[in-house]
Image 1 (cartoon, rainbow, N blue to C red):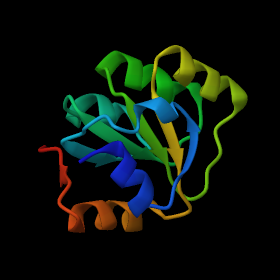
Image 2 (cartoon, helix red, strand yellow):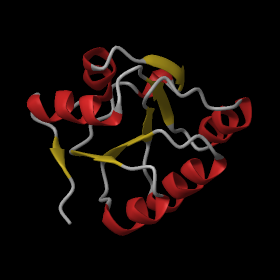
Image 3 (cartoon, rainbow, N blue to C red):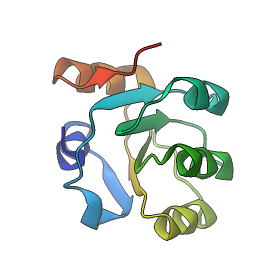
Image 4 (cartoon, one colour):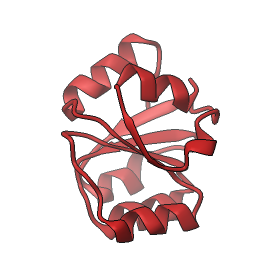
Length: 115
């Protein structure tokens, strides 16, 4: 699924990385625990999280994740946005809860990562 479609389905604001909306992802993973993200994500995964701190970007860097959706209307700080910009990470924000956002993406064919 293209990130552009994810942004449309979840009615997202694009905070940084608009030029990356045509990237493809195969999976989605939702968590506020970065230890779970480290343990269970695969390549080509979009991360859904409500955690708004630098650990999210650092975790994405380690796993080479190129897209993050902040759920529940969470708005990352300027520092987080700048880190994402440096790493070419698309940052989206939606008002949906993680549960709703995950359900919408799943119902449109985006699979979760296997555990």
